[in-house]
Image (cartoon, rainbow, N blue to C red; front, side, top):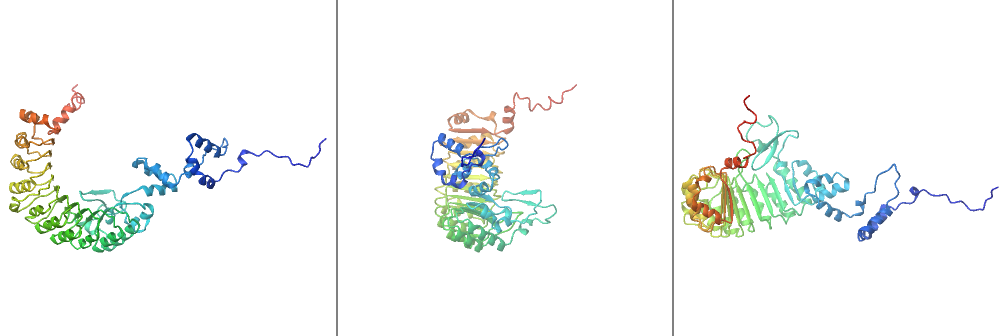
Length: 477
């Protein structure tokens, strides 16, 4: 017999039907969780996690508890090569990855013009637009590498050597792209661009007042009219005429405009520029903070080297790929740069003895001398280096005409020499090292001696069985 007491029997409730804590509640309490000890934190996470049936193995995403700033700091600890994979986790991580990217090389101009670049990467401080300024076929597998720029071309698409210049975006399109870029990247520190104009530079200077480094390809005198608007510019690279790519003129007029507008320059590089004594002199007199000057493949007028004596604070002079250094160096024989510390010559023609003598006289105070793949540097030319009386470092690479006796005749006169590096100079032989030269080697602070790379390779392969002229694989039967 049964009877009713009037009370409803309480039915057991499944643990899965209990009310779960909402993520908003977890978000409000995340500060308390993060401030707890590791053991307490693990216990609280375990209590917040609902029971999981045997058929389900999914766990909640505890990264939702972390604010963006903390999660960004965690992602920063991951190597840059692996961060791109993190952007595929979810939309939130995708956006956070974009906020961490600081440097970008743009190859698709539409990505910039549409505004997607700014929304994807809002914190950029370094942008290279040169490749994006070239109209290239989208599915071409041909990559052209130049020491100035690299780009893709299509099979049979271009019929002349001036295809690069013919397929550049117009100045108006580049100006609009720069306006879209600078409107969202006010913290830009470095910009590389080609085929821009004075107005384009003025727009960049107005929006990006903190810009410190600028690289202008296909630059001309008229473009430099806007260079004075950059108040904090310290590093400038001008690319004028480049054989096989494009023609552009930077003359004494442009160098004078540059000197008057960029008086805080620290580093200046002139590639394929013209000009002469007047332009270099103006730079020396106006840019008194200039410490490093690089001249690459120049088209300078005769006598330009004499203008260097007005660069009173110049510490580093680099000449790269110069077929001729100066056609009229006589005026430089009585001049010098008193503050110069480093002279770097790379892929230069050093066949004219009078020119080399004038250059060494101009740089006689240098403490570091570098000759890298220079043509014509034989014993006779290298003997002029005795004009350097305070050399502490000498680096020779790819100087195939210089012999051991030619090297010894000079460096024994450098009583302050501390660092010597000789690499890939095939006429400098180990067997020809004299006792006096060996004694000098023992007194050096640093010695890198690999003049003959083939003999060095042979000695390193001794006992490995490699280099046996096929004896291992072509034995007679």
